[in-house]
Picture (cartoon, rainbow, N blue to C red):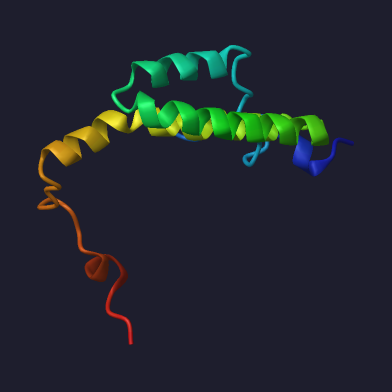
Length: 116
C-alpha cells in the first residue's frame, strides 16, 4: 500500500503541477563561469571603479570561507547578491536621474500605519 503522501490526485487544469522539489529548496547553483561574467558586467558599469574592489573583496572572503568549510554556498551567495546589484543598476540610475522623484510611492506611515 503506497504512503498517503506519495499518492497524487490528478490536478485540475487551474492547479499547479506537483514537483518533486521541496518548496524551500535552494536555487540551482550558478554556472562555473558566473563570477567571470559578473566581473565583466561590473567592468562595463559606470561604477566599476568602486564596485570592482568591492566584488573582489566579497569574492575573496567567500572563497576563503568555502575553502575552510568545503561549502560553496558563500560563493553562490556572492554571485546572487552581485547579480541583484547589477540587475537593479538601471532602475537606480533612473531614480537618481529623476531627482529622487517619489511621487508615485506610498509613505511608510501609510504602509505600516501609525504607531503608538
